[in-house]
Amino acid sequence: TIPTTLNPRMICHRPYSCINCTTYRLCIPTSRGFVEFTSGSCPAERPYCDNYSGTCVNSVAVAVKCASPDRTFRCMQDGHFPHPSNPSRYFICSDLKAYGYSCKEGYKYYAPSQGCSKFSWIAEPFDCSNLNATKVVYSSGGSFFAYCVNGQPHLINTCGENEFFNVTSQVCEVQCTRELIAPDNNSCLKYFKCQMNPTTQLFERLSLSCPPGEGFSIVLKKCVSLNHLVSCKEN
Image (tube, helix red, strand yellow):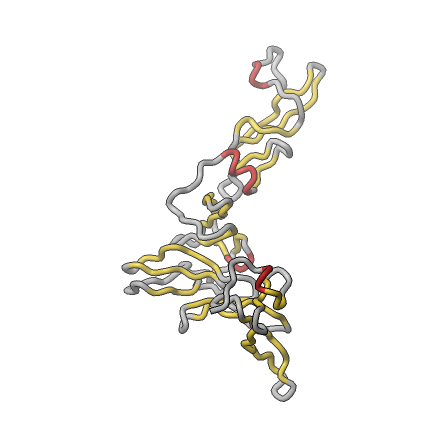
């Protein structure tokens, strides 16, 4: 029922808008213009109201405008990251600042798909029990890993494209599941090539060196003159 006397706070200018960063508002047209029909708080999994659409989102762009960074999580790079110990929470890092999100009740964050899921087998993200000064891989697979300090996970990070975290070597390594060329993160003068072995019919990884005077360009994915790679020097 539309009241005969309008509270100024009920007057709005369009059907879908935000009262503030965490509250959406729906308005309906009347002979006196748009007035508030209902409003509510954004859910935990989409905590910010986007004033452009009037809907609740988990967009980094909106979060930067609305939320204060979560200083309990240290970003090693931009992207989506699982919470160190709570499987129902996750972080989005933007400009190396972390913004925390929660999945809705009954859901857990699944890092490989960068979303919340009902998978019952999703366990505690990182098991650092009785571990110190070593890295462990994300419990549900993928390329994420954590550095363990005194039994607790610290500094969550992820490997690059086409890489996986090798628990034995404790570093990210190229994973050959298709033909590709990838940089060697230990030397700008080398690169990896994944190709099919005609005998075994399996992909194999070859470690190759660029010719003298050249280094591997990550952008071009080939060896180029060191004159074009300022940070790469021959030993």
